[in-house]
Image 1 (cartoon, helix red, strand yellow):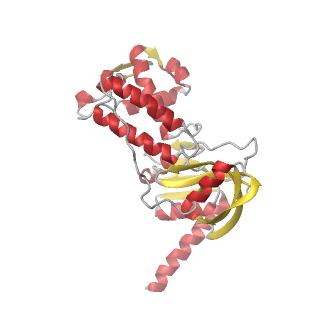
Image 2 (tube, rainbow, N blue to C red):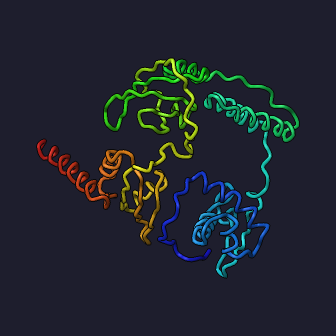
Image 3 (tube, rainbow, N blue to C red):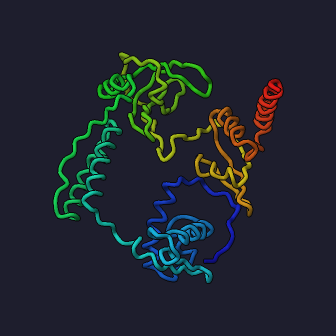
Length: 330
C-alpha cells in the first residue's frame, strides 16, 4: 500500500451511494487495465487524482468475507500506475441463489408499494424474475405481501386519492424545528417511503418551491377543488439525501474532532478539509440554524461552529444557558 496523503482540497459533495457505485465499477475496470496511470483512471471516472488515491486506500482494506490478509484486495500505485490483484471474486458477476431471488422479489414488491405512481419497481421486478429463473433454473413464483402493519398515517388514503385524480391538497403541517403548525397548499408530485418514513413530495405554494413532507407530521389534509398539476419547472429532489440545500440557506462551517468526523458522511455538505489527526472542517448549507445548534451541543465539545459569527454566538449563548441551569440545581 502506498500513495500520497489525503488532500485538503475542497470537492463537490458526494453521497455514499455515489461513491459505492464508482468503487464497484472501478474494481473490474482496473483489473482490465493493469498499470493504468492514475490520471487516466481519474478521467475515466470523472474525479481528480486525489480522489482516485482515496478510493484505492479504501479498496486496500476491502475484500471477501474472512477479512484475513489473503482475502483483502491488493492495490499498488507507488509508481503512479495502478495495479489491482486479488479482486477477481469481487469483480465477477454475481449469480442469484433461490433464497436470494426470493428475497429480492419480496423486496421489490415492497418497494413497489412505497413508490406511489411509479412503475420502476414493477419493471425491475420483471427483470429480476427472468434473471432468477435463468440463474436457479426455475421461476421464483409470485409473492403477495401485505405491508399494512397499521403504521401508515391516516392521511395516506386522502393523499393517494388526490394524487390519482390530479387535485391540489391543503395541509396543516407541523414544523418540528420551529414547533409550529403551518397551512400549505401543495401540488403532489409523488408519495414515497424513505428509511421507514412515509413522505409526500410536492410543489408547496407557500414556499414557492418543491418540498418534502413527512406524513406523521401532517395534522390535517383536505382535497381542494383545484388542479394539482405542479409547475413545469418543478423537479423532484435527488433522494440519495432527504435534505437538499436551497439557494437562500445559511452557509455554516463546523470544525470537528476525529470522534465527530462522521458528520461529514452523514450530512450533505459543500466541502470537507481533513487534518492529519482525523479532525475536519466541513461546510454545510442549512435551512434552519436550530438544527446546527442542537447538533453541536449534542456532540459535547467534539465540534464547534466557526462561521457565521451570529451562529457562533447563538451556540455559545445556548451552551451558557444550559450550564446555568445545571448550576441552579446544585
